[in-house]
Image 1 (tube, rainbow, N blue to C red):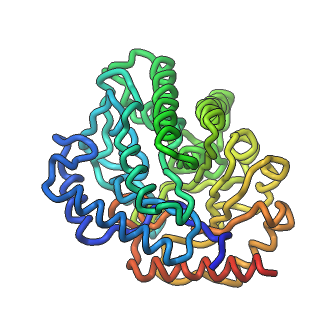
Image 2: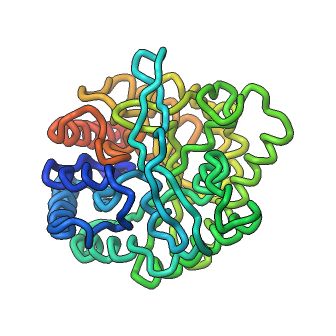
Length: 383
């Protein structure tokens, strides 16, 4: 066991819970958290969360989540829980890169957002989910709550045109209320005993030179696109700084998308390090380095002088086989030449089930990969 191995957050759901989740995916006449719409769903989720927490603790994890079992998708459930929002089923889902890299893979379609009133983060369902988790853990491990970064939600709302014909007549008003909603949520989270919140973020890669499946061509990084990147950073930092004022630790997880063992786009850290790594005020960065798409480790230099921790996603949650231990140890050694070893941690590049369907591996294979991560971390940090 090693305290230097961490998980990003999400874990595979069991079949009993997935039966309810599949029904939720088909309907948009229901409202988050859906407990009143399906008899037995709340009880099933409660039981599943308790079981996955015990498994995490038994596996020696020093920082745990609820497996994100209370979510359907890694980011949208948080938005569904805000006041002023309605969800709906769109004509299409997101389009990820197929494994053959020559075609597209369509996700679930219940990803539509209608902004029908003034946003508010007060009395969010996630607070009850956190209280449930805190009670189960009962001081046996640290707890973190994963939510999408505010800039990701801002970017998705703009990129998909969700503000058109909505309550909001300007992007500026939407931005202000979105930020305020996050602050309201953090107020309630702190009051409930929260200490660690993690902002997950998949939009930074749009600005990478290699980005292809993005809302603009990253190779044409003109002033407008750089201004948008700076806006994303400013939105995040305002909420991060507010969290710090409340005494919270604020982490982030950066990835290129993770759905059914597929990714959304390419893009290395090399071309965005001085933006999304250097300029954001997070206490801990979970970064994705499971394959060559992430580029070299030289981008870690952007974090060298920052007061933060770095979690290196050298392992893959997308595969059903164990990772190359030699490669991982080699990369850990290389990273430690740039960043002090006591600031580094090891993880998989992303969670195992960012959305309900999860990646293409079994629960046993998932726990085997977690055990391997523990073993590699113990080997490296014991030197």
